[in-house]
Every structure is written in structure tokens, then in C-alpha cells.
Image 1 (cartoon, one colour):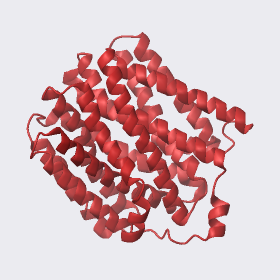
Image 2 (image 1 turned 90 degrees about the horizontal axis):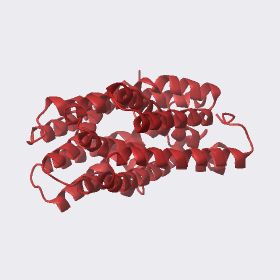
Image 3 (image 1 turned 120 degrees about the vertical axis):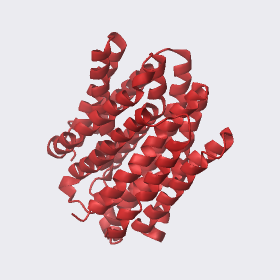
Length: 378
């Protein structure tokens, strides 16, 4: 019950920010911008997230979780409105960077809040509930693309209004107490270096995957002559990821997070094979379901794995490091995929195949080096 105001805030903020993320790509495409430029604007958002990951911990410590979230909402609102004032690419890049910085601080604040108030043995389930709410809001926001004209400024004002409205539930939020952690407690709660490395690399891969799907999947669908159904397919992709959140969280707590990482990798790999080998709407829906279920659960699983049993300030610091690696992935993913999208008709799908292949090899290597069976680390 104490997290209800936080979840309401998350729903409204995600409706606005996630809709704007897709709207920017579709709007620029409608204006005739090349895929590489669209990828650059998408990367600017994640570059801002990367920059904020250097100071998010201190920002949240100085203002507190609630006031930090209020400041982020205000910045996202103003940055969305300012996009309607000019069409200059440098200005858009700066505004999207500012929005990315605000979003990164918001993510660190919310995720450390959720993990910090959850029992250690139920952190994967807590992250699953958080991601379920996030992706539900994200999926619903994609339907706005089909309902709202993307050629004008009305979509930007709707996104800004939702970001502004998300400040209201925080009035009733009870801030978490995450300040109590001694040096001894920190050392005892810190997971082994190999586990943190695996979690950090997993967040990097998740950032590359989700950043690319969010920024460039609409463009890939348009190249496949599915431009009239962009919102529908994006919503299906995200809602499938949402549907697998709770089962993933329960299974990760029961059989191990590393086991679930292997399962997610297999799901993404099968989805890529279906995309590559089969045609037709049915195959596309199946592939998107597997991509969504596997790809959108990778981040919460690797994050809860890397945090181990951390508490207090150490948890906020670790969430900041994970956001840093996630932002690097989100920054580089769209740039690389944008180049491949210009060279190949199904360049985005090829990028996902190569990415998941590398992640699978890394999982196998870590299993061999760690000399322990997958799933023994909870």
C-alpha cells in the first residue's frame, strides 16, 4: 500500500515519456529525416541518461527521493514543450539529452526505492511488479501513436501534460529510509565481483536491446510496409514483455536469476530465428512475443542479481552503476542499429541476432569460469 503513490506517479510519467520517445522517431520520419539522424536523436536521450548516471546518487541524496522525482518531472515537462518551438537538430539533441538526464535520475530513485523497501528474498518479484507497471504504461502509451496526429504539436503537449500530472501522486508518497548502512554492513552485503560483473554486462546488453527496439523498431516496421500498424506492433511487443514480468520474477526467486537469464536469452534467440526465417503476420506476432517476453525481462533480472543483498546507500550507488552501463548500451545500440538499418532491409533484426549471440557466449563463459551451475546464485 505504501508504494501506491509511487506506482501512480510511475504510470503517469511513463505514459508521457514513453509516448514521447516513440513520437519523436515517428515525427522525424514523417518530416523526411534519415534513419541515421533519427538514431542520433534517440541516442541523445540515452546520452543524457549516461551523463546523469555520474551524479544521480548525489542528486538523490541531496534532495531526497520525493523532491528528486518532482524535479525530474518538471524537467521532462519543459523539455517536451520546448521541442515544439524549433526544428533545429542541435536544439533537439540538447533537449533530448536533458530529458534523458531527468529520466535517469527518476529511474535510479524509483528502482532503489522499490528494492530498498522489499525483503531480500523477494526482490526479483518486487522488480517484476515494478516492471509490470512500467511496461503496462509503456505499452498503452504506444497506442497513442495511432490515435493522435503525429505531424503537429498536439502529441508533444499531451506528453508534457502527463509528465506534469505525474507530480500529483508524490504528494502522498512516504519517502523510504535508505540512509542507514554502515561500512561493515556494506562489505557484508556486497555480492562477489563475478556476480556484479555479470549483472553489469547484462544491463549493458539490455540497454542496447531495449534502446534499439524503442528508437528504431517503428522505422523497421515502416520499411517492412507495416507503417499503418506501428502503434499496434509496438504495443504488442511491450505488452508481451509486461505479461512475462510476474512469472519471471517468481521463477527468478525460486530457481535462480542466472537460470532465468539463460531462459530469456533462448527466447530472444528463437524470436530472432522466426523473424529471419519466416514471413507472414502470424510469424511476426510470435517473434515479437518472444522478443518482448525475453528482452524486456532481462533488465530487472540482471539488476536484482547485481544488487545481491545490498541495503541503504550502497543500493542507491549500485543502482547508479547499473544505470550507467544501461545508458551506455542504450546510447550505442541505436547508433549501431541505425547504420545497419540503412545498409540492410532487416538491419535491426540482424543487429539483435548478433547482440544476443554475444550475450549467450558471455553467459556460457561466465558459467565456465565461475565453476558453479547456472541458477545457484539467488
